[in-house]
Length: 539
Ligand code: GLN
Image 1 (cartoon, rainbow, N blue to C red):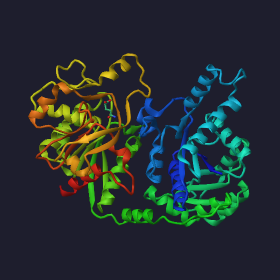
Image 2 (tube, protein in one colour):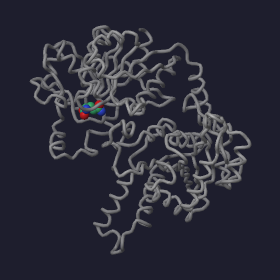
Image 3 (cartoon, helix red, strand yellow):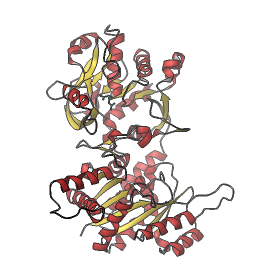
Image 4 (cartoon, rainbow, N blue to C red):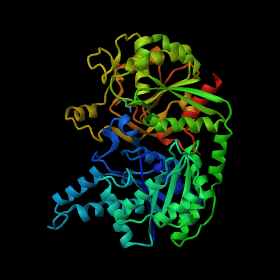
């Protein structure tokens, strides 16, 4: 019988529920089992693709072209598996299916009701994901915090599943224990309330992962045990860590894997986190820093700087740096500042490499183009992802190929030289305002040209990478750009779509139409990110 573990959050959001869920998966894999993981987001949006990244964080694109939550990225990185669309659901998605079924008379004349029909659709999806992955353990992370109005139906699904299969379902509460600075004492009360709230939804958690600045002490464990009716051993300490990759090891130090298996009446097939331990050691032993500037615009949210919008890019840079024995030192630079203060460009020379990730719209574009010009001329290693590739092409067209007013149609639809234009099949989509889930999405093959940086990095003639874009290099300008020295290092197999541009006589200047960051895994860093970091180390 497959087993299901629901992971829910208490007290507040942003305490690392996703990382905790992914870590539980990793330790169960380490014990010899097949694992998959689902994320439930309680908002109405059908996918994460229509939300501003500052609002929501990164949009993680799956191989089958779904625009999902960044936690799916955590699952792929921790579990080293490819996750597909069925593993991601939102309230919008669930309701849409229920309503479509109703329209198709699939409820056979019954009154379709919020309960049980909505939770039943949730359960159908969970089971489908389990079957698709042939998973022994299926982890289901319910977004948000218990007590919120929006995730009640998902808790209801957990309750109904447990009612039907009491021996096959566990509920883990990831909660937060604050330490008020005036007293310095770790407080358990908010977690006690979270458990009560969960109880009122008909669910008693089987375990509490106690997130806090510090490890949990014995008196606190005892208190939570008594007030929440959970045995002391099932209250697991989850203190802050320097790197999220330490979490599986911390959990196993408390025998979390053993405890979960025991609850299901199962045994470890093996116990092996050797690779992971070696990897975590490489983080701790990383040597000299390699300093990378990331030029973006989705950083600011109120008084905070939120790097979440670029989560996979950041992780990919870290994986590559650690694998080369270096400490990644990443800094966020705001594209717009280079527009108002051109003197700032000179500061870019302090960096070992500059990366421009994906983006949309015109804000910050001219600043990014100035940065790219500086990197090209001063021979600073440059890596452009998606928009970063398109804008590198614009910069080259303007300043090398002599097309002074060149631009991308996304920013300047009146430019006489739209070296980046909308893909033909996308034009109709945009005209019809059908924006949701309609970009060129997911994995597509790309063939690499001989004797290019990319070909050497990948060591293979054909690759597959994930995409998310509506615009592309305009083939009408390919010849002109090629003559001026731009190298088309990768194209779609039919040759029609430019996937990679490079420059020669430069230590590393690579722009890719795709998003390589989605394929980087801790134990298998991405070859292009590695090549970029290697070039940066030489500078
Ligand atoms: N805005 C560009 C496009 O739609 C680039 C997209 C991206 O960077 N993900 O083509």
